[in-house]
Each structure stands twice: as structure tokens, then as C-alpha cells.
Amino acid sequence: MNNLSRPTSDVSRIATTYETDGYFSPYDVTSEREAAELRADLEAAEGELAHDRSLLSMLRGYPARLLPSFDRLIRNPRLLAVATKLLGPDLLVWGSGLFIKEPNTKSFVSWHQDLNYWGLNTDQEVTAWFALTPATVENGCMRFVPGSHKKKSVPHADSFAADNLLSRGQEIAVEVDEASAVDVVLRAGQASFHHGHMFHASGPNSTGDRRIGVAIRYIATSVKQATGEKLILSQVSGKDDYGHYQIAPPPAGRLLQEDFDRIRYNNNAKRDILYKGVQPERIRKNR
Ligand SMILES: O=C(O)CCC(=O)C(=O)O
Image (cartoon, rainbow, N blue to C red; front, side, top):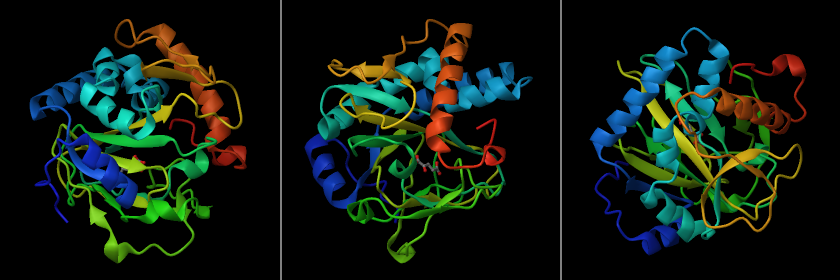
């Protein structure tokens, strides 16, 4: 279904749709020109770090902690208006990694639910998936099964498939009603919002351009990491009465050493969470 024509201005209506369907899309965030500027800034940084796979991987995992332009994106008032409506005013960003599908590649994302692997103690989380490039059926936009978030947490199995963009190639191990899935088509500068229990997946990119999305994971400050070290997160709105996390300052410049150091710490802490129960030799080092 191409739902580009749906109006997107009423945040209250978004909350109702989100509760019923587990997602809302499309939602206008920036102009296409602003999205293109973000992409250009990212690609310039990719060029600067091309000599070092580890630094490049940190950039792709944490663009908002290394580039002021992406820090501004996660604080965009239009994104925060929706996140606030769904989660309340006190907000952190648990992650804002990029999902990149290079031109004419087989990379895909298997059917999964996000919250199964994150070790959070509640579902007070929402992902805003911001399109840096258009997301189309041809380049592997996301697919959602409306209402599937109501099943709560379902069993998954790990495949570790090479072309799967997910950390452990995790895949839902119960039936997925693919016939009822919708294509989440976005223009550059739009976002979709999805619940952490939403059944979702995406196919390969068969076009000649990259498909790039920023998956911004908003959580309420009350949400606790059930295990592991205190992560370093960005606080993007309100106050933090809980202190469950360390708070990172916004990046004071581009690609700064101090920010890479914080990311290294976070990566180690997150690896323990995301790869819980996985044998060390299966862990992908540069993800
Ligand atoms: O970008 C994709 O195709 C998948 C993204 C995803 O699984 C997510 O944002 O939770």
C-alpha cells in the first residue's frame, strides 16, 4: 500500500492510529533539501573515515553522537512532538543507528520485533525511522504487519545470515501474516513511527542508489536497562528523575575523539546486551 497521501499534521490522531496499528506513516519531518544536506554531511564523514572500518562502523551506529547535524535531527521538534505524545515529555535516545542498503545489493532485514533483544524493562519506546533517501518497494523499504504489536513479545530464532542487517540475523519463529503487511514508502525527509513489538522486515535494494534510514529509538527516562553497564545516552527533552543512564553532551564538533571514546564504551556495554547468550565467535565486530 502506498500511503504517501495520508495527511500527517494531527499528533493526537497519530497516537490513536499508533495504538491500534502499532505504527504511523508517513510523517513529514524535514524538506527533501534538508534530508539531502544531512545525507551529504554523512557521506562526507564516511569519506573522511573510509580508511578505518572501526571508526566508520561507529559513525554508522551513532551518527547523532558524531555529527552535530544528526544531533539536531534527533531533537527535531516535529519528531519530539510525536515521541512526547506517545511516551511523555522526558525523553532519551537509546540508539540512532543507520540502516544502509547499498545499490543493487542483497542486504535485507528478517521479520523481527525490536524489543526482544534490547534488555529494557518496559515497552515505553518508539522508533522514528527517518528517511535520508526515499524508501521505496524497489530499494527495500520496511514492511509492517498492522496490529502485530498486540501479540507482545514472540519467540525468535537466530540465523546469523550474512546479508541480514540485524546483529544476530534474528527472525520471528511464529507465523507472520505477510499477506496483510504494508509497504512503508517514504520520501526523503519523512519518517515512520513503529512500536517495539511491531512485526517488521525489509527486502533488498534493487536500485542504483543507496537506501539510508536513521532509526531513532526514543525511550521514556523511566525505562530501565535490565542488565549490564549504565549506557551513555542523549537526553533530548524534559528532565531525568531516574538516573538509569549516563547522559552524553551534544557533540561539540564533527567526529571528535571524546565522542568516539564514549561510543566505544557504549558499544562494549551494548554488545553484552544485544548478543546475550551468543558464542563470542559469532559476534560481528564492526556492526
Ligand atoms: O531499515 C530497515 O530496513 C529495518 C529497520 C528496522 O528494523 C528498525 O528500524 O527497527
